[in-house]
Length: 210
Length: 246
Image 1 (cartoon, rainbow over the protein chains, first blue to last red):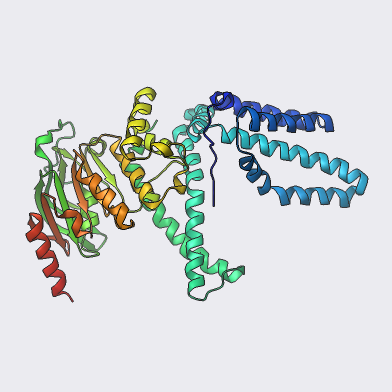
Image 2 (image 1 turned 180 degrees about the vertical axis):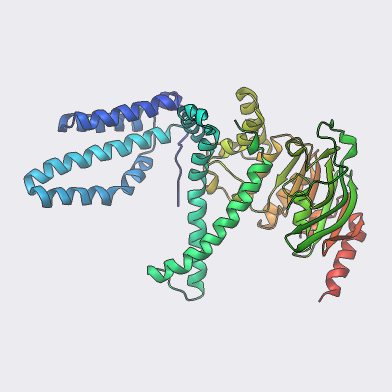
């Protein structure tokens, strides 16, 4: 499993502060829903592609990966619109909804591909700053975000290894039975991993963070 | 269970590097299961190896040295600082490298993970960036600064884990089976790296070749140090012990 988010480049988009990019993404998302028309949505899609591919010089494959991940969902959305509203109306409203969502997914992909995780985490910590008043430590929330991104592929790899081990011993590799025999050992491995991770965080001074 | 004992070091004590690592009557038990018994020794040597069978207590021994485990009996002092009462100061002086690098790499990308410990130490951003860059070059990871950590090879992950600890500039580093998951090439790389460290190192390992140039080797068996010598006689004692168990 690949979770390669950041694509290093020396581009103006990469140099923009992560907070500004996230704010632009949030504002752009709202505007895209408020000003929902074909010219606006197609213009936004073109803008995202220009910024992503030409200005930020991201590889097309990086954006395609993100689009591909939601392709079936978008297709299903279009089908639902066609079924509910009929061919003509469904293709129009459904198509608009699909292109709008695709634009947002690609815009989010451009933001994540041009911002280091540490910069995004710093934004999360700044946004969560006021929570200090109620005893929450923003650094802990930032660490949580970073570790989530870090450990999704690790846990996924361990699940794959368990499935391989089951298959090597003649076990089921698909279906509910395979899931059942994967979940328990995976849970045990994740608990052991979490225990060692907690020790590693201690050893690297996590208790000193603000 | 953590018990406070009389005679603990003064919490305000100043570090004295000349004292090294001291264990005074140390024992440890997980519930009813005793894993270490009455260890009293001082580690001054630059390179100390620890060997023992599975379940002998050597990993617990390693964890005692930077306070990941606080002994249920006795006291561990690092440069005169108690692991029970001056934990934070001890951990700044003793780095710890685990067997499984995947369990100690915290951030998704290489440079960010190396920077993590420095952030916790409050190192200013400019100095942090410089030290991270130096560490990446030192460990041959400078071409991977922005790479996702999970895409590194096993050897590179272990190098990253070591870089993340050494960038914090601890005076001493404890390695818990650092080569167990590595192939021969990466085992050699890590062994050379450990051999070249200026810091005091304590290495718990099953790789006896790793210890041949060390200054001192402890053999742990059933919670006790049963041999404590320079490598050749200590490793011979360990082999004889294992032969006797066949």
